[in-house]
Length: 260
Image (cartoon, rainbow, N blue to C red; front, side):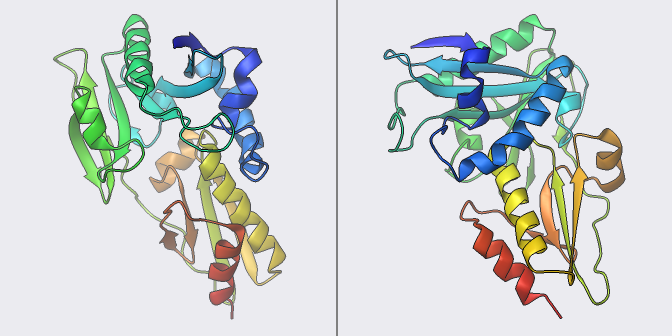
């Protein structure tokens, strides 16, 4: 196994979250490509785990805090967006259990230290699922904030740096009389989140003029400051809680159930 910086030859694999063969997942790639191209000058960093057979089997993406509006804290801390190892049976097959996650994390931390980071935050689930807080705690992180099943973990490099916290919602879009209002807050860095946005947008379009669809680009700091929302889909002001089983049909049926 080798940990390397992302290069042009591996961008397609990175943008597809290690699933370049998945035609459905590919719907979320254009928005991520746009975010990546706009954010490179802002400091986004990506490292890849290359397995012994040359396959790209893991990735970690991390950014200076200003590029992670869901975290409130010192501008000199960094934030890990995601650490992901290919565990699908399709494509190159399951590559879990080979130490890629810890190796990617150590490489990213060292890179952040060299770039002047005072600490590193990472989001994770508080339940034993993908990118969970208990795993991060086992890697030396401390749980510093929780919202629902979402936990924020932090490792300080500078003992004087304050713990970060989650962004708190300040307001949300309300209903529109006689219409179904679908509001999508999307930042672009997560291909899966982009896919949910695309499904909701397409479902709203297909259901006609009784549905109003809005996109809020939360890579814009002004949008984040106004709403206190980094990512999420709201239908008539109620948040849709993502559980990983989303489809175009689920969003269509949800919106249709609210139609007058």
